[in-house]
Length: 128
Image 1 (spheres, rainbow, N blue to C red):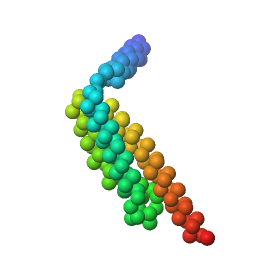
Image 2: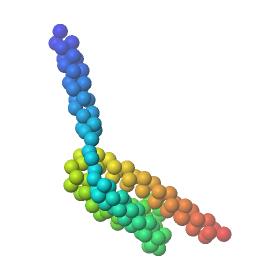
Image 3: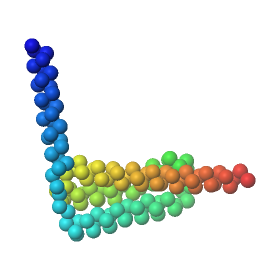
Image 4: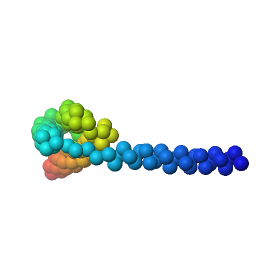
């Protein structure tokens, strides 16, 4: 009888926990047009920083993964500024972090791909 009661309580607790976590994402936030423009400007600055860093000749001599890591680290303060903007508008930290993580991962993929293409082109040119 005790194992059956324990299983029933465990199932009930997991359903309750799932409902609570679901509510965190259902709470809507309303961002002002001013904040949206600020975030778009910060995104532009972040992408511009990454693009400017990629153009520097210092990274051309490095292996593509190392260069990508250094480029991303140089531009990380832009993301921190965006996170501060989100939190000042009462956006839940999970939502802000999720958006920033998504943007960071997309940027890393793009930078790595471009650096690998550049590295392959340089090696192809050296072999001729």
